[in-house]
Image 1: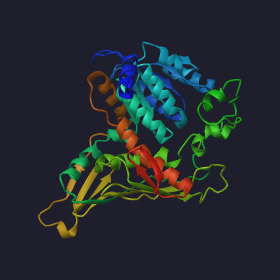
Image 2: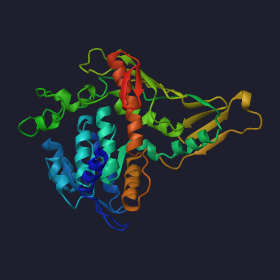
Image 3: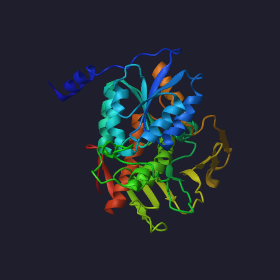
Image 4: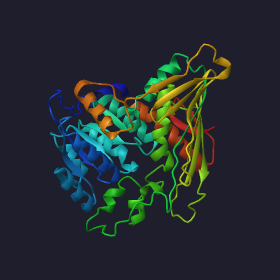
Length: 399
């Protein structure tokens, strides 16, 4: 049997998701009950009647978080996510765990015939992302990647102006995501009540990550550590560059460089830099520049620069201003958006995809394109090398 035939045969054996009519209730399970999951749960509880959706089960390896989530949602609490995957009455799962768990849970959810909302980034590595893409292609389930800014339709609308030549030749796009902190950046509270072996399963939390002794900083501030996170790139930049990928019609970068360092929070035990930038050259242009500092929140204009006009994204949509040399007979364009960066809209879009096969705002391929750019920047920074994309093998190589 050929490899393609084997994949097709194995896909045919997978459980198929149940078909839901427009008036049938969607039941979901929440895997991971930390801060971001609580934002999702708050939104979903408000959608119970309007969207006919129900949180049926919640899962966490830390009992205090699990109990709080169960009390909030009145859902069934479980400590092993596989219990949710085995429940035939659950239609989709929300994966809101640290990044290092995204791949395994996604693959197993797809195998169980569950539709998936997976928080960004889609996976922790590019190799994992390739596996997820292949799985979703054959599993017959819908997967929404949690870059909720894509539920702001400004970016798909901007793409139409890029495509029709309003901006001319696109050469540069720039965007940022910066913050400032009085104390440590991402200094999430360390809960002294957390006791491994008593109310927290540390071994289960580590899962596919390297085995390490209990460290409350690694648990509560996991974004600080490479074992579980790509830092600024995968937590923040994934939101930004995905917007530009959508607006400019991009896919994989040709070359990427990541720069930065620990410049301000030098006493922090964090492994990741507090200041990070990435430049991505796409085939034939543009170059996409993304910058960030955790010690200065002055914003940078979010521009797409063409030789004939500049598009600037604004809080209300975007404007397009002709370049002076090409301004004759051209008027400024002002677009007012109707969507927003919203987990409510992002879940609602997934519900529409499940019930009516509506297009997803951030499907597995868009999630993959953004992930590749961000993780190439991380590897460039860590290796101090300029990286290129090997399109044939779908992996980064030294440029």
